Image 1 (cartoon, rainbow, N blue to C red):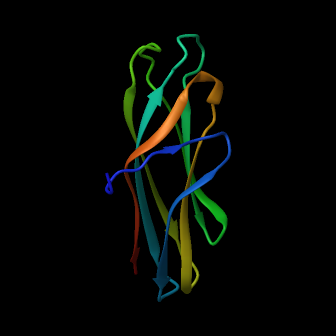
Image 2: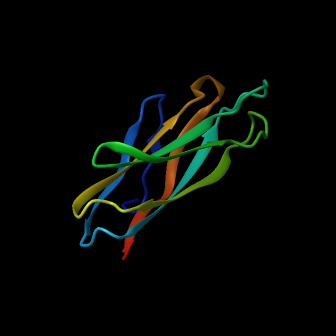
Length: 128
């Protein structure tokens, strides 16, 4: 299965994807969009929390966007397929080359296992 992957998330940020983007003018908007497909196994039927994925985008090593998404509650006997998306619009990003990185972690590891199974993507565009 060369076209598949599985990344088990821990409570530490894990680098999932990165790309570079060149900004040519000072007056700009940079739009970033990330989507991650993930699976939950062994979810706890105990309230109050289910496994929660945290997606973070960094620009040149500085966090510029973040989102938390809790798994739906469906009992511990079924695997759950989930999708999380994150969109951010940055204004007046400095002229030059920038590195964007997408990180993910499970902030509720005691409540179940999160595995990134795909699709996984991040994109960005400069609007000047």
